[in-house]
Amino acid sequence: MNNDITVRRVGANEASGYIEALADVLIDCVEGGASVSFMLPIPRQKAVEFWTRVAHGVARNERILLVAQSAEGHVLGTVQVVIDQPENQTHRADIAKMLVVRRARRRGIAQRLMTAADAAARAAGKSVLVLDTVTGGDAERLYERAGWQRVGVVPNYALMPDGTLCGTTFFHKQLV
Image (cartoon, rainbow, N blue to C red; front, side):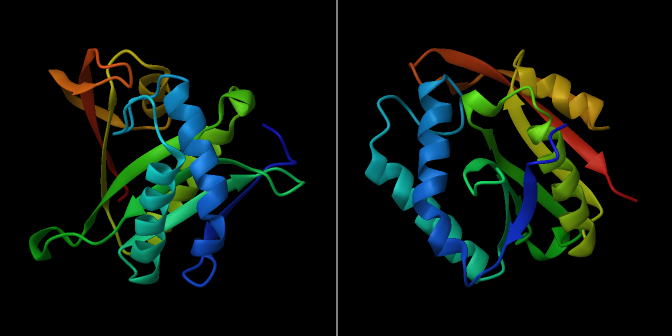
């Protein structure tokens, strides 16, 4: 792992200042084939609008936003912990939009983001985490190495950015 990478929680007052950099990360990942709710071509305005909504969610304490930055301050990755849940699920959180730019992959950044997400969820009083990912993708191995348990696969659940169908694998992690 690189010691020149910092993973930190972005506060409510600073989240809007990260929108442009996070839009760059999202666009890079979608253009690289990541199935993360967006289709090709992904207009910059759509990415900016998404991260603006995320920043508002951070300000409302509905989600925790974590970023991985280089020593120079470049945002290389991100993950969210969605803590706003229905009243019968307040013990749980969703992990969303775990993204690392292509040029920074295979450097342990995703692993560090997921470790930070676990810690942030614990600090928020969460004991169960859930997420979903493309079946057969690199992220499946990452989550399994990080102690996540595979729940199952739903075939043809989503679309890849190019429009082809893909299966989705669901995972959970017990933090207690």
